Length: 60
Image (cartoon, rainbow, N blue to C red):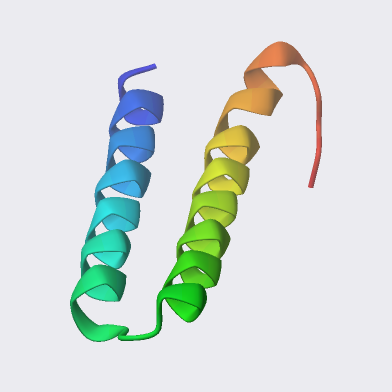
């Protein structure tokens, strides 16, 4: 259980770093919004991939 929490925390930290890098280095607001949406979806999918086996749902 502790490794699950640490894994989710690492995913959130990496996502936050990506958000910061997008804010800092991407000048176009439309592209930045799309990249942030992509990062959020990837982080959500990674978190779900870790949580769903606990619920008995084998996804991938």
